[in-house]
Amino acid sequence: HGDFNQKIDYVFKVVLIGDSAVGKSQLLARFAKNQFSLDSKATIGVEFQTRTLVIDQKTIKAQIWDTAGQERYRAVTSAYYRGAVGAMLVYDITKRPTFDHVARWLEELRGHADKNIVIMLVGNKSDLGHLRNVTSEDAKEFSERENLYFMETSALESTNVETAFNTVLKEIY
Ligand code: GTP
Ligand code: MG
Image 1 (tube, rainbow, N blue to C red):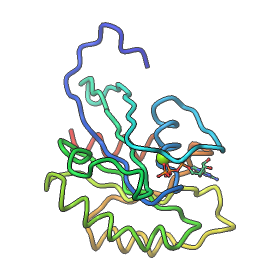
Image 2 (image 1 turned 120 degrees about the vertical axis):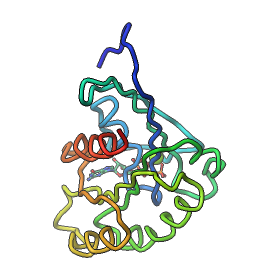
Image 3 (image 1 turned 30 degrees about the horizontal axis):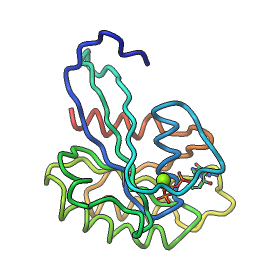
């Protein structure tokens, strides 16, 4: 994605949130580096990656922040959300509790982030359809009620990862 000598028109901060092990870090690895690892370690604190892309002839640097889903490893909440213009709220389609917790994540997000933040609800691990425990209909219904974008992704198979991030970035822009 070489951003050597590139003029940056906009820098957009996007945060990843959601329960532990839903695949936040692997979605980021897929989007930023086109990499994926099955033995991904739980995130401790905060990490971020950037990717520069062109949307409508503008060069946009996406700065994607990733923190731990586990409470004890999480970053300082207010600092994490500060300045974020987009958010990916991730659950695992095979783990019902991760979807049931989405409302709580949304509450935290809305309590800390800018009110115009663009939010995408992401049902990850769509490659594990045989283990599905959250229907697309349930998620779609929730996202419509809460005014969120919604997409199912697979970081493993690279399905919709690009589209999910690009949709958020386009909408911010
Ligand atoms: P925390 O850092 O603890 O909050 O977890 P996380 O949300 O960052 O999860 P992580 O990306 O580390 O992924 C957890 C596990 O799920 C790892 O074993 C990943 O390889 C696996 N995983 C992530 N995305 C996918 C996917 O799309 N499909 C499948 N089958 N596994 C995935
Ligand atoms: Mg992680």
